[in-house]
Image 1: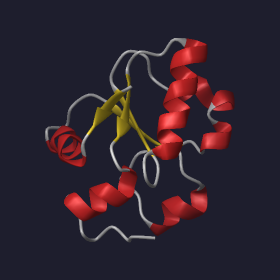
Image 2: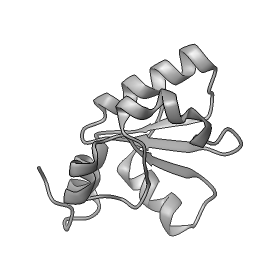
Image 3: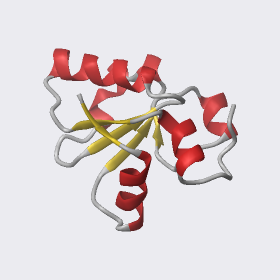
Image 4: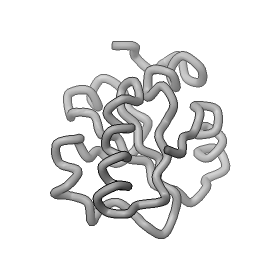
Length: 105
């Protein structure tokens, strides 16, 4: 499984690179803190799979990286996606390493 570190994600954001950022946490979690990505909760992924781009890199994140890794595994195995990247450590790691204003919950 491909992944990106919080530092690599920050560089992508700063450089305004062409990629899609998807948050697979629940809406109440996204209200606590978010990175500005598209919210597609884990339980809705298969119903909303058409919203996931196939023509550019896609970074998927959750709180710690576990749910997003599970989502990526399913999308790769069942649907053949090959452009997905997991955010190492999720939004919590991004908050610790990059943006201390992100609420740790």
